[in-house]
Length: 72
Image (cartoon, rainbow, N blue to C red):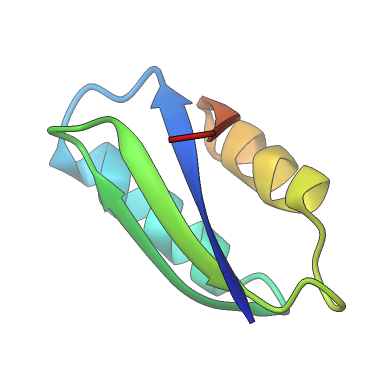
C-alpha cells in the first residue's frame, strides 16, 4: 500500500473534489482518496500491484480534470 499526491487542475468547487474522491474510491485497488479543493491536491492510498499511477490519472481525467503526480 502506498500513498501519492496528485496536483489537480480544473477544480471549481468542493463538489469537484467530492466527484474525484467518489470516482477514485470506485476504482479497484484504491483504498482511499482525499481531494482538497483549497490546495488543489488529491492524496490517494492504493495498492500499486492492483492499480497503476497511470490509471489513477486516467480516472481523474475521465472525471473531467487534469492530474499530475505531485513530487512534494
